[in-house]
Image (cartoon, rainbow, N blue to C red; front, side, top):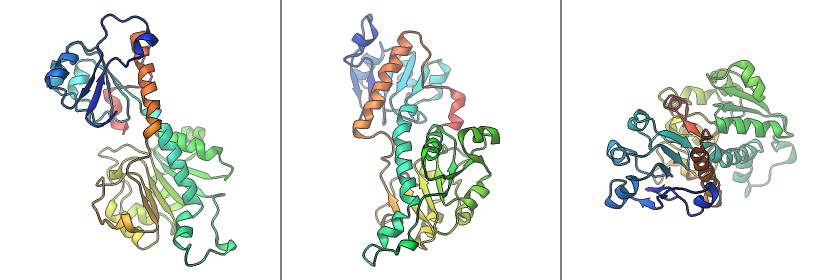
Length: 323
């Protein structure tokens, strides 16, 4: 689904998959949800399927949707979509964050492999001469610091454990106790210890007031020389100015799929450093991968219609710990 787009049920093939519906409400809503055409559709809709860029479900929208009982978000975070009115009306909210987690974890694991192999240093020195074999860096035995045991963070840990590289995995997450971290295959540590001991630090925490600039100048300075910072979570979790300064000296490398601000302004130093890769928020489902989100949304609607608890339900209290 494109920006500013929300699809009110039902997709063309959903009726056949879910059985008989009484007067289904088909249609695609583009633009303002308070436009005349949108109002007519929402006035009868019981389930709303939304995507990235969908306008917020304001009081005006909700007042015009008297039969709405569920919102199925075929994307990740619902923070910008769901308002207090949604919770107050008891509308069920569900997110495809789990379906979106796979591509992000795969992207992160690829970035971790590049970082562990010292690909940036090797690429920057390519024309000056290939490094001698004893000077080349390998991945085996490297220490990876994972910030946040989110659904993506857990997938990353699982992928690291599955590698033959024998990574040491450190985890910082105030909600995960030592035994639980051990069950995931990681060592629970404080943030200072994680930064000080990790060759690579990868960020998978939500953006909350507590995590704003979690990796500040002090924590970045703790990361050993030659370390790499990877961020596929939210840009605001890292102090951009402090990271820019560390990367400019060549002390740290970085792979950033998200930044603060996003996008970075034209000419920003991070965009021109040989030891930094900045990608335009592409770690999540892109192109053909978006079919995963659509398939998930169809199955989630099937669960709702058939009285089965939704797999991706989000509750008001979850927002403090979700992206």
